[in-house]
Length: 272
Image (cartoon, rainbow, N blue to C red; front, side):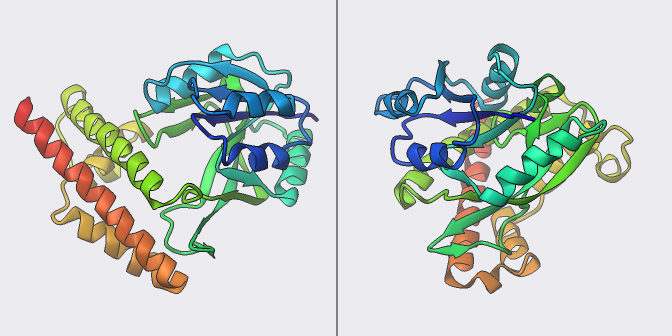
């Protein structure tokens, strides 16, 4: 059964060609672009992809708009970013999965993140992502690092989606995570304004998944020395030290990112 491919872009002329080549098996590739100012659109069009453009506001709103307004040729969609590459095994297995799908509306895939020519096999917080789905059954929540919510049963597909988050260099990663941390801080403040007061018990006992997740997030946000805890969770708890120098560097970058969120939440709290 054919599958449509959705690729989000903003100034991705460096990464997009290899991304497109990895999904050349699909006859319906949609490049969902946020008005790039480089050659992203021209590259997509030369490859034969359809281009849909919309100004980016936040991750959940942008992705939800795409799923509701883009007309896909096929009933199943695989979503990916321009700095990701689909391996041959994954391409074969997702096509098999949709042919044999019973009541599943979405499938998880495993992503391999690479840094300093090393697969970050251990230091990543989670390698599993919902990327293959029926678009009418999927929605996203949160301003950044959105939560993928499928309206129905979920399956898993073997094979790897390879991710190169540092393909444009450390400066680009830092710039991007500076922006991400701003969204995270805004999300934290919004959660505290619109949700009930934090409950330690509800973080583990709330029947509703979204309520439980909210209190779990709030619990983590209240942990003293959170950036240090994040480093220890990734480097020691997840055994990131097995990823060598790349694992150490990545864990330190993630701790720094967490500290940026802490500082921005404090700043917003003082202004409110």
